Length: 317
Image (cartoon, rainbow, N blue to C red; front, side):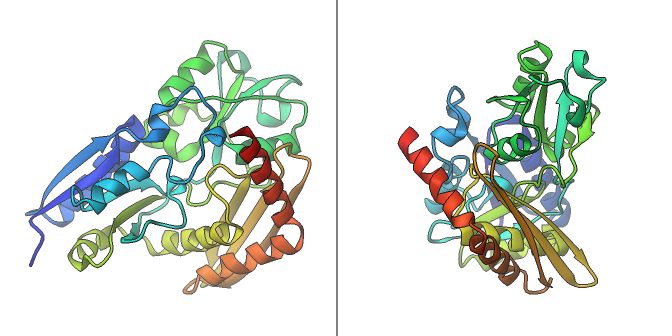
């Protein structure tokens, strides 16, 4: 029986609503007779803004409430920033679709006092705002003379704090800035040689209830093959390392002539240890590439680094 209405679960944040409204618009264009609505709500990660993300846990921090809506039958799909979606989903839910990726790179944003600087020329002691342990570890490794300070809140709130002088610069996702119309605030795209991006960064993941083929049929028009293959390799890498959104694990991936190359990184919180390598394979079978790379890094000591991080964060809790 054809689906007559589709309810989309979404976070209530401005970026989440921009992303979800884009999905809604694309689906309406592809399915003119389908009634589509958005069920917006705040997640745990949206409510707790005075504590660093790493201290409040990360498994489903921005997704659990949306998943609950689908599991009780109040929504058919949920739209996530794919980097926020855990690699192990609750029973009954699947990752139904991955959309075309925006630029997955990290970006440097500065206030007016620091426009003459690039990341590599920032004066010693400059205050860098980031809530990501992945960014923090890599930047500490490359620029130990900088000072790093946690920053929470939505993108607009963070930019206001930057412009008020609380920080000399921020590190944010280029994709999020672009989607919110802040492309002009991107002062520098940080090269992957300095900062590998988060798993799935720049792509949207559409989660849905398993065994609903009519829903899969509706959303498959948004699937982007290249992005999907790259992100599935990245997610299998993260899953094999048993890492989460708030662990210093970074990636970069590309597909050339049917071959997918995945670069991966694991670092200690203080940035003093950083292990980085790569693996390649056929793009049509992406997940074994991620598993292979994870095992390569484990053989170089990644497991010990991640265990130490787990022990530190457990003690904090």
